[in-house]
Image (cartoon, rainbow, N blue to C red; front, side, top):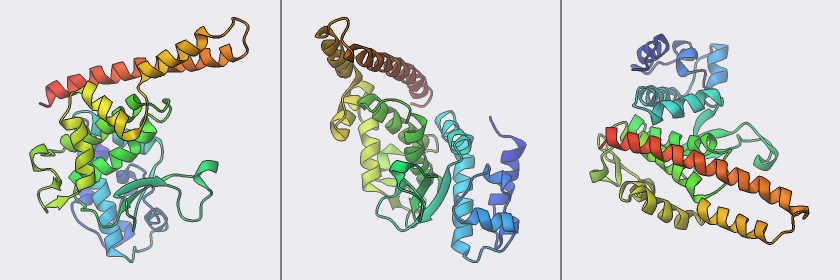
Length: 267
């Protein structure tokens, strides 16, 4: 598969729960900045909270498992690494959320985003993987205009990252049978994609997220263009929007083709 010496080193590190930062290898954590623990590791000072060490290793185990998966998991791990995403745990109502760190500037003004996971979730890879994938998917397709197709792509990445680690759809809302961890809200998200073919899943996600499908957006833009004179200053803006819609549609079609190949390989 795609195991490297880096992954082998990581596997050796995460097999135990060390008691101090010097036992953790930053490179083996894919150079991730995992909350305050990174500063502790660089300073080579002991991490006083054993749970923090346990969570760091849990995230690294999840990333290792994802990176060794058939496809989507590796793409998510690459995005985590390439975008320099921080991963941390905190008390919160959502199981996962992308947010600014405490004391940072307002999200609308820009900040180093942190992928926060609830400190109450199970630390098994099969639980952490879809939560990481759910938030990273928003960055992976974040350059695409907001539409139902983009939301579908996000959902597909989320669910497939769980299935690649052996997620059992027949046991939902149980996400991880090993400890019986269940998440009704996450299971509901999964089932929209699992229980419907692509076209129906897209329709249901459009309803759920209150977003429009690209064919409708394209038709609306065409209708607006048809009403304008050739020299209308608004025409250039609409033509640019129409171009973006075409690009987004081609991207979605390519995604569906790859997803179909994945479905055939993972019945």
